[in-house]
Amino acid sequence: MIEQYIRDVPDFPKPGILFKDITPLLQDPEGLRKSVLGLADAVDPASYDLVCGIESRGFIFGTALAHHLDKGFIPIRKPGKLPWKTASESYELEYGTDTIEIHVDAAEAGRRILMVDDLLATGGTMAAALKLVRRIGGDPVACAFVIELGFLPGREKLGDVPVHSLLTV
Ligand code: AMP
Image 1 (tube, rainbow, N blue to C red):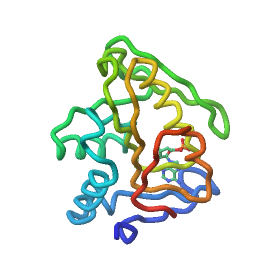
Image 2 (image 1 turned 120 degrees about the horizontal axis):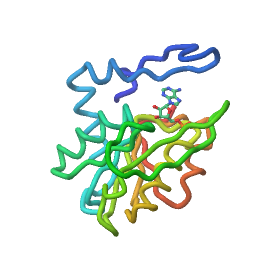
Image 3 (image 1 turned 180 degrees about the vertical axis):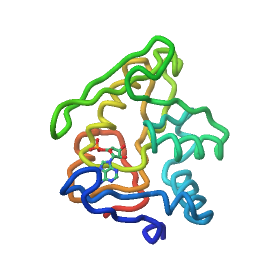
């Protein structure tokens, strides 16, 4: 079980949020290996060509997974970080909005893409990431998370894309 490696930090980054800290999981060789292998088992690797991860914790698991399966990796980044031509998508937060970006040539048309992030909460981030991947011509086949906050309706925001999580809390 990976649950033992997740540290709950109350009131971070602001009061009322119970932050799921994955650094003990990353620090432990078995925890890191189990989470990457768990993601590899969650979705048939033959069903996708590339892994896409969302900055910044999605990069950690996404690149490790892509490397493990000998696939390429696509970063989705915060605004102003990608140097080439980008597509961008804004989404609602509790207070205000956030934006994420992808390179317009990150995937050839029709490429099948596994979407990866560390945690599914409201689903706003991943819903925006799915829009970005589709806008550049990619085909998101599934979303995979290490942790899902089961008390939030995050998966409902992701339409008919299958959602997998290693741990639901
Ligand atoms: P959301 O868009 O609400 O699904 O939020 C997902 C993004 O916010 C992920 O990239 C998470 O890393 C981060 N996040 C949201 N809530 C938490 C939490 N309780 N603990 C850790 N990370 C969180």
